[in-house]
Every structure is written in structure tokens, then in C-alpha cells.
View 1 (tube, helix red, strand yellow):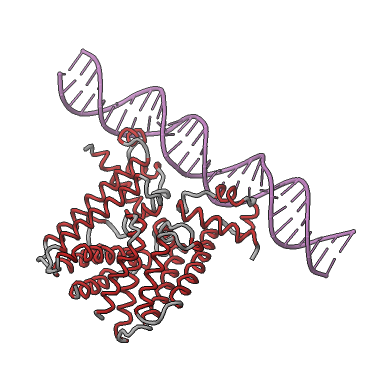
View 2 (cartoon, each protein chain N blue to C red):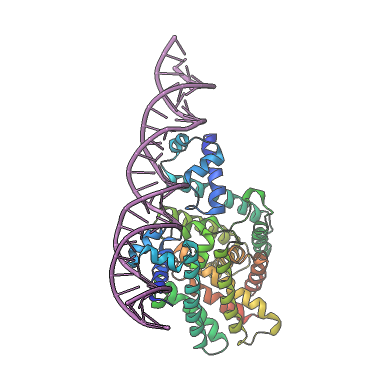
Amino acid sequence: MSSKRLHLISTAFNLFYQKGVHAVGINEILVESGVAKKTLYHHFSGKEALVLAVLVYRDECFCAWLKERLEAANPGMAKVEALFDALDDWFNNRVDTLFAFHGCLFINVSAEFGDLTHPLHQQCAMHKQSVAALIESLVKTTSIDAACINMATDALCLLKEGAITLAHVQGDRKAALKAKETAKLLIRSM
Amino acid sequence: MSSKRLHLISTAFNLFYQKGVHAVGINEILVESGVAKKTLYHHFSGKEALVLAVLVYRDECFCAWLKERLEAANPGMAKVEALFDALDDWFNNRVDTLFAFHGCLFINVSAEFGDLTHPLHQQCAMHKQSVAALIESLVKTTSIDAACINMATDALCLLKEGAITLAHVQGDRKAALKAKETAKLLIRSM
DNA sequence: ACACGAGTAGACCGATTTGTCTACCATGAC
DNA sequence: GTCATGGTAGACAAATCGGTCTACTCGTGT
């Protein structure tokens, strides 16, 4: 991949993540990145294609980071704790590779492109599906009964999304820790 | 309140809720509502003031609806079930007064105005606080130990926000029912 | 030697943005 | 009768939007 292309994606991500997609103009991205307009339109067919590339980029970064954090923990309840400890680090800006927390990019973009059939919204749904798959494989390392795996996965996903929303909308920096305690209580009772 | 003012707020709400704030121009609101531009700027100092009024309007509608649904249920676990049954009705467009589901307006607006200090974002945080207060009073009607009231409230809020996010981003129409089962399991173990 | 792809700088286009302004009308209070 | 208020219709302004285009430079592969 061209270095200019990557630089555009990285710059666009930072701006979109902070201010939202509609609030950031093409020209702002160009000035910030120091790239010529023609170059942008050489790599991307338009703004929407750039946003899509940003979503793919962020999905890769985020999933790689989360997967590493989950794999580093011992199987079982420790992995459940690792999930929410990772979120806690994210919310409190202790993860350099994820940049300063401004909520979940995919939730934010879904808010701006509310139609479920929109390509950008669908990309966001795909990301959430990928994360759910990571969580499901986490659940399978616990002693939870096979019949409850789907339910436990759903529950952890609900708590995860809830924590992200609480952290972003309310500014609750302890949201991940609250979710962790709830998750522990829940998993023990399954 | 002037009828024109209310009509503007109502029209603006529908457009903002469907398409997002930045994606809807003042002119579109004027055409849709059939109100003159001068009248809009007579009632509101600018677009931001209109958005703020829309948030207040939606907060009143939503909280009044939820409060009614919760009060109609018997104390205890029935109220917990009522909370998520209400959400289920909302997600599946069975509540006319809330209009077709497009996620939570306050989460969506927070996504577009990511800065926590922004007046619009703060209004969103206030709404979430109001809903949390309703949920806390719900929790107090259960047999949960007084020392756990805060924890139970947090847990239900997490599940509620998670369900809204799952329903909107993933298009999961059963999100509220999943959250209900999780909540029941959780409350029983407290 | 030369062609070509990637890149720069920036003028330019039409459309759209928020917001202001003039001119006019209807109604009710005093 | 008169005057303020709330309203309509719409021209207008200044800025910005996404996107196209020309003219030019630089480095690499053949």
C-alpha cells in the first residue's frame, strides 16, 4: 500500500473519530495530512470510499489489539476479566495504538448513516460481528455449558456495548469496571 | 408555546433522527415543515438552538413514555421485565409516539458532537441521567439489598444501552429480549 | 532515452450551507 | 385608529462543500 494512501487513511481516521464524518471536509483532511487533492482522488473514488477505508483500517487495528489482549489471559474467567480490563484501558487512554477515546467509531458512523442498508453502516455491523466472534471464542474457554454459549456471548456483547456508550455519552470512565463486575456475577450464575 | 415553534421542533426531530444533525440542512426543515425561514430564526437563535430544543422535546416524550410503562407494572421483577418489554416495543416500532426506531437520538447526537463539554452533548448526558434515575427507582421496588442498588442500576443501564446499540448498529430486533433474559438471570443472583 | 505512474499546487465548478434582510400581511391590545 | 407581534415569501450574502481539472515535478523500469 502506498504511503500516501495510508497517511490519508490515518489522518482521516483521527479527524472523523474526533469530529464525526459529516463535520470533517475533504479539504480539512488534505490540509492536515499535507497531501494534494488530486492524490486523494487518485486513491479513492470519493469521500465515501475514504470513509470505508478508514472503517476497514480501524477494524483491523481494533480487532488485532483486542485479540492479543484476550489471548494473553488464561482461559476461563480470566479472559472475561481481560476483556473489560482492556476496555478500561481504552476508555482511559492507556492504549496508544487506539488513540484518545471518543467512543466507538463504528457506533458513531452508524449514527450518522442510520440506514442499515447503507454500505458504511453495513461495514460497521460487520465489525461488531467480528468482535462478537472474538467474544464467543472467549466464552468457549470457560466452563459454561455448551447450551448457554450463545446466551453468554450475547450478554457479554450487551455489557461491552453498554460500557462503551456509558463511557462516551456520560463520560463515565469507570464504565468498563462496572461492566466487569456485572459480567463476573453473571458468568458465575450460569 | 407557539404552534409554529412546536411544528418546527417536531419536523426537525424527525429529520435529525432519521438522517443525523449534520446531514439535515435548515432549508430542508423549512421545506418539510412549510415554515418561513424568518420564523425559524425568530424562534431560535440558530441551528444549534433548534437542535437543543429538539433534544429537550425528545427527552420529555421518551421519559414520559418510559415512566408510564414502568409504573404500569407490578413492583419487583415485573418492572424489570417491563423495562425491556418496553424497549422491545420501541425497537420493533410498536410505539407510535416514539416514531420509527433509528437508535437513540441522544447517542446519535453524542456521536456527532463528541466533545463532552459541548452543550448538545451535555444535554444528551442529562437525558441518560434522567433515564438512569427512572431505572434506579425501579430497582428500589425489588427485593435487592440496599447495598446493591447502585450496582443493579448500573447493570440494568449497561444492558439497556447495549440493547439499543445492538438493535441499531447490528439491526438486531431481538436485542431487548436478550437483554431481558440476561437481566432476569442477573437480578435473581443478587 | 524515454514513457509512465505517483505526486504537488491550486484554480475552478456548481451546489449547498447557515444566516440576514426587505417587503408585506394579519391579528389583537390599547 | 394605531402599533406591536408573529407570520410569509424569498432574494441575497459569504463561506464551504465534494469533486474536476490543468500544468508541472520526480523517480523508476524498460
